[in-house]
Image (cartoon, rainbow, N blue to C red; front, side):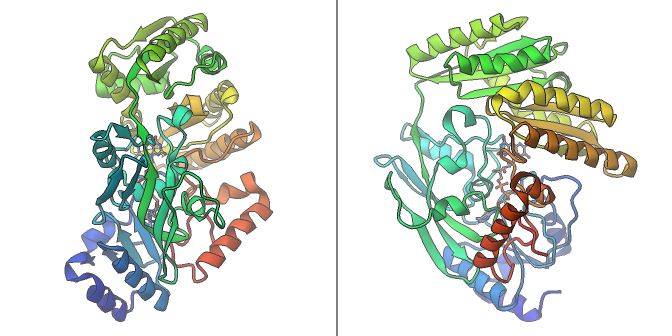
Length: 462
Ligand SMILES: Cc1cc2nc3c(=O)[nH]c(=O)nc-3n(C[C@H](O)[C@H](O)[C@H](O)COP(=O)(O)OP(=O)(O)OC[C@H]3O[C@@H](n4cnc5c(N)ncnc54)[C@H](O)[C@@H]3O)c2cc1C
């Protein structure tokens, strides 16, 4: 239970209207987009409006040894915002100002509660864009996506969030406010603290302002869909596109289970009898895009696509990408519980990974739909299950263990983009060994000695 002094001091700093203790609020903030997680109710939910207020709150938490769980929109898929002990959920959604778009330096300063698409809309007025594009751009916040180093649909050509974060202002665990990085392209002063806090999942400090790099908006885009009746051929086509020196902005895959489910949900005209489809988008200067799109069409046909479709206009393009963005929501409505993973392998190992996932599905008699960012080797095997079915959940856990084992043995990683959070913390030794995990723990101990920042996530010290 929270000491009454903590609540009083929070109200003094934030005002009563920004401190919530009703049960309905506490229940809501005990959940995020992750299924089947252990959780407890927080004691209080707060909505600070400035760096100064965040710093004052952290000082209170430090004084009373009270955990703080920073939260953006709660769309993470690794249990990152779920409270594991009682304490304070700090929603950043009131800190939602785009502070500056600097078209000369190709940068923007934003507060952490800014929705990613809102930054893109502001940048567009200057002919610029912010490339990181998790499927949730219209919901997810900049603070949450920087803290996850989110990836998404444009990783292959443009990289992921960590490649765009140039600096930040943050509050560390003792309440000190620090600014790292800046607008210079080159900056090698000290340790790369901006990089350390990007992807730290709220375990090392609370980010209150973010400086990101923007890029000029590409002049043209073309989207191509390839239909395959053999999933191995689809896997081979992915490598063939890159081997032919085309780097698409986006190269996605959906397997048959996902295609059928999405078609039933979004009615996009997808080929429901296909084993897999590849969705590809090339962008850049108009002439280059024409040439690259034609080359992709040829490669897909050469690699065994039974049908290759080039989107004729923006409408057809939108239909393709809306269908892709609907993959998870569509699968999620099939069964009460969706366990979605993001094991990632080197691109050349995609056919092996796809085969392994199919074997796991058969072995454990589970329904698994697979889609994902094929060009990045980042697949999302999605297990459709029901958390109330205890016997099936045991099989689900075994299947997930096996999927991670295969990914690591193929030279991959536990998480391409969804983070470790609470869901994957136990698997970290698989990737880093005990010595590696101990080093992560040492960093956490040095930065947050009282373990008050998002405790129990990524590096478990309790
Ligand atoms: C349908 C669907 C599709 C998705 N597609 C993708 C995808 O393609 N690619 C991808 O990478 N992800 C994807 N995601 C995951 C998710 O959308 C991203 O991780 C997103 O960027 C998280 O943003 P958020 O605002 O919801 O963060 P939250 O979930 O609220 O928080 C994420 C983490 O950041 C911490 N945090 C939040 N704000 C701060 C702060 N200011 N300071 C310090 N720590 C903070 C939290 O404690 C938590 O650990 C998808 C999720 C869903 C539901």
